[in-house]
Image 1 (tube, rainbow, N blue to C red):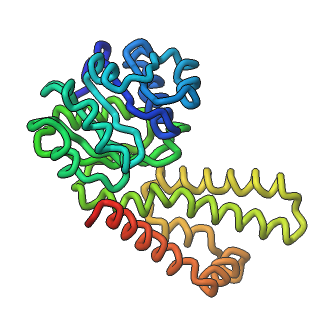
Image 2 (image 1 turned 45 degrees about the vertical axis):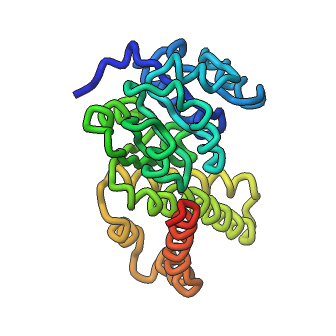
Image 3 (image 1 turned 90 degrees about the horizontal axis):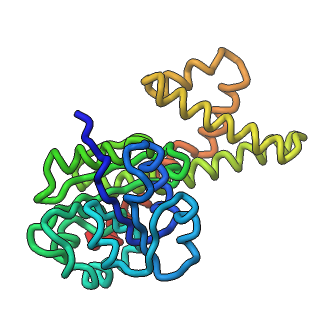
Length: 273
């Protein structure tokens, strides 16, 4: 059931790309007005783009906490302890705290926050800035279905929003958070292959980008397994099977699986697990 978000006050501590992408998604939903959003950052560098959206800005983290109910922690993981030490005195049982800091566990957040705080941990990815993100969240010990539903409602315009156990968050980081870079690398390599064969770089990059976009949408919207869609492109003795054979010889499948594994393990290391 959709919730009435009209009077919900949303705050962001941190004004980087991810905070901006999430804020844009929330505003695009039309359910939260810009005047009900406030963002804090220590310098003016990143606050300008929020001001352009009509969002209130400040340099004071505690001011954001005092005037909002839903609070996104969008700072670097190593800054989380000092930020929470600063604002804990003004956190109330009515606040919903949502961390997007990679590697910072729910247990750590709950230890640093006042006892009984409602905590959720969210891992978005960069395409949130164009409302095509893949976001996974988990709940803390006090956050219930109501808080989960509110978060889903707020983020509905940011892309795909899924809930899972906390153990999946680091895997999601390796698959989707870091995975965006894997896709960019593949797109770059495909375009360079076209340049090698004689196509101008600008045109090759545009076509590679559209190919990635179209393939992704078809995969998402068809509901079919990637292997089935791949098979649909292949014809006996055709160009695609020759290209796929070259990718298999180059170890693309094993390399991609290894990349997800390596990034997941690194996320676990950052979280002290």
